[in-house]
Image (cartoon, helix red, strand yellow):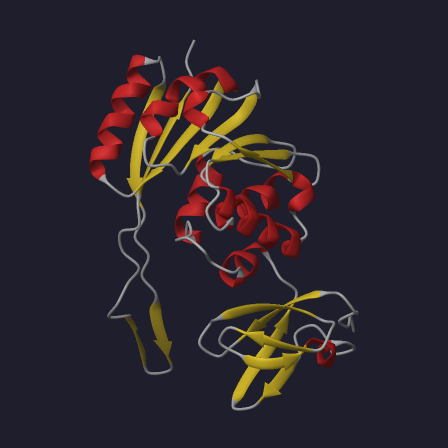
Length: 254
């Protein structure tokens, strides 16, 4: 049975579905939602084992991309898995893809993009705020995905250096202003995506995309609802994960 080695990154899964990331090394660490835990306690335990810590029961998991994004330290609101997964699907982000991103935030979407393009692809991220860059870089280094990401301090609306990339993904307040730069960066039939919390942003982005020769314009809103499943019946949860943003997709035209 595979066991946790010194230095391994471990996802601690609680009974409510929460995820906390910790390194199996070092002394006492203060962890969000867990409390004080000595990382070296995990060394030698089996992946999938259960750890009792105070009143908590924690499952020890080898982190997948969902665990990495759920467990990262947040400085800004993140792009949630329900939206990030659709972005990867619609933009055909795969191993070897080259993707330009703008608006790194806490690095959640960057993490998902880097995970998808590994091991031979590359993510080029533009961000205007140095504090977000520093924060997200730490998260990427912790996840082990930093070598796949090149972070640049800059405004994507002023242009990008990359050419013939497979996709451009924008999480910025004014994606319409970045449409010309996206067109220059994309390969002939490359994918465009904008993550926009406001419908007014969507309308301006559609206008800019049409003016710059993009086609196959589509805007989606992803709603997520869990179900409670029991032996005597099942029902939808009373609360659901509703609106976070609209996702606007398009393809570059000639």
